[in-house]
Amino acid sequence: MSKQPISVAIQMDHIKDVDINADSTFALAVEAQKRGHKLYHYQAQNLSFEDGKVRAKAEQLRVEHDPKQHCFLSKPETLDLSDVDVVLMRQDPPFHMGYITATHLLEHVHPKTLVVNDPAEVRNAPEKIFLTRFEGLMPPTLITRNREEVVAFRKKHKDIIVKPLYGNGGAGVFHIQENDENLTSLLEMFEEFYPEPYIVQKYLPEVRLGDKRIILVDGEPVGALNRVPSEGEARSNLHVGGEAKQSELTEREKEICAIIGPELKRRGLIFVGIDVIGDYLTEINVTSPTGIQEISRFDGTNLAASIWDAIERRLESAS
Image 1: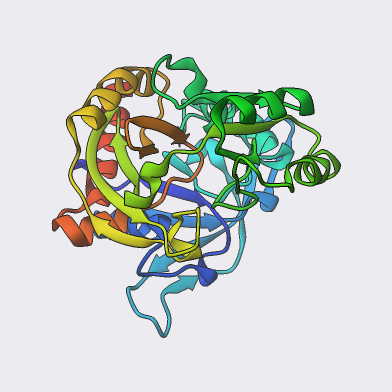
Image 2: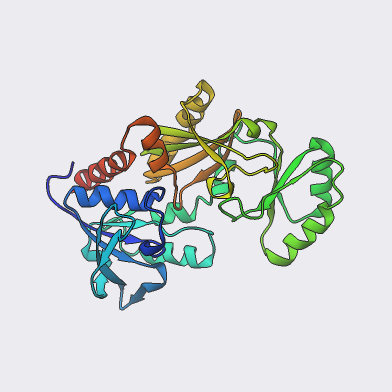
């Protein structure tokens, strides 16, 4: 634990809208407050750069685990982010140009102000592309805008998943079977709405048994949660009806964590959530990982405390 209180600016979607029993950022705020840290809250649209300074229109924050009123905010003030100790970059994806711009701005204060996760590495590790750096861990995957390649990929693998390259939360994820006549129409829609390639993967029937979310802190696995899709649904995300179940790591999942963990730590990616289906790594979430409250309830642990321990160790080693 930090020997003295620190100042923490939390960049997030507005805290008044969070689910206090599920939101990971809220849990991090509660733990930081418990440690005596001074909290500020601001939204990404209130981040600005002028005369070499990165500033945020921020409010001092106090939180309570009370469904009637869970947050108390002061009047807005202009906060120079180089004057705070930690910035938590926790606004939700999608990962778009606004998100990328925020990483560029926060680079001006990092590492003097510790930004979690490292903004340059967040920018360089979009979830569905970053995992391509780890050979042998992901399922058969195609990233393309070429329809003929998608058709050939389906012919080879029969059952496929098509999804936006920078999507999040299960939005725009389609399960296309071998004889599904909607593939061309779906690709036309993707081409109209998305300027970048899309990602196509072999469908993993093991998803019916669950899509494992594993939390890594400073490269080490600290907990896991299995998310089982509801009947008639290909997606396992909790907010679209997936059921959360307690889970432990399999030997294969430990192997995956051992392979990617050192690289996550080297890149300054302190808080990461990975997704594993069967024997395959399907995503590495570095932007705004979730799941720590559910895992903590199942396991009787405090993952928010583990994350703050890692952040405080980074601060102490840099001082």
